[in-house]
Image (tube, rainbow, N blue to C red; front, side, top):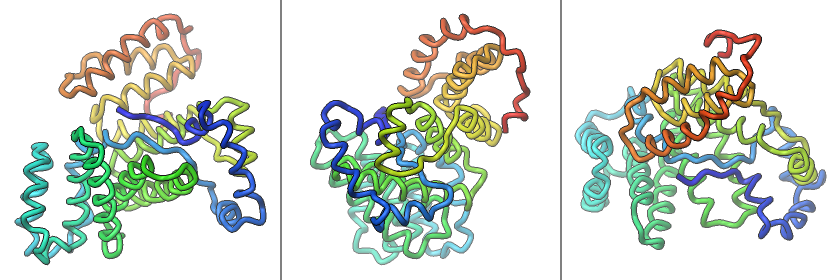
Length: 317
C-alpha cells in the first residue's frame, strides 16, 4: 500500500533543490496565501493513503440517499453487489455497456462508477490504463458533486480520487489539492459522523503532522505560513473514535492505535490493542502486512515502562 505525506515528499533528496522555488508563491501578497490564512483552522497538506477505506465504507455509503429515485434501484443494486463481491472488471463492463443510458448520468450512479474505476485502477498493471481509470473516475465523481453535495460518499470519493490523481500532476498542484482533499473528508464527516473510516483518515492526518521533525516544520512554515497543530493525542482521539463507532472494523486502525500508545509510552494500552489485533482474523493481504508490522513492534512495546496515568478508552474520545 502506498503511504506518504506531501510534506515528506518535498524533503526527499530529489526535491530539496526545488523546495525553495515555492517560497515566492506563498508570500503574504499572494492570493493563495491570503486565502489559506483566512481558513480557520488551517488545512493540512497531508496526502493520505486512501485505498484501504473501500471495503470498510461500503455498508453505510448510501446513508444520505433517501431521496434517490426509485428507477435507479436496479442499477444501484447491481453496482453495489459487484463492488461488494470485488467483481470490478465485471462492473466495468456493465458500465461500458450502459454508458449511453441516461440513468447512468445520475449523481447517485456517478459516484459508484467512480469508485469502481478507482478500485480497478489499483489492480491493473497497465500504467496508461491505470491513469485513464483514475482520471475518468475523478471526472465522474466531480460531476456527481454538482448535484450530490449532500451525499457524504460523494465527498469521500472525491477526496480519494483527487488524492490519487495527484500522482499525475505537478508538486505545486498536489500541494494545493491536498487542502481540497481534506475539506471533502471533513465534509463527509459532517454529513455522516458515524462513518469510522473518515475518522481514521483524520487520525492519519494528525499522525503525519505530529511526525514532522523540527527542521522540516521550520522549512514548511517558511513556505506555507502557520502550520496546523497535530499531536499524537489528536491522532489517537480520532483512531479511538473510529474504533468506538465500529469496533475491529479495520486492522490498520488498530495498528495506528498501538503506534500512538507506543509514542505515548503507554505500555498497558499498547499491549491491550496489540492483543486485539493479534486475535483478529487475517482475511486480506493488507491484514497480513499489518500483522507482520505488529510483530516488529512487539519488542518496542515490551521495552516500554508502565504508563503511570493510564486512562480508560472513553477518556481519549
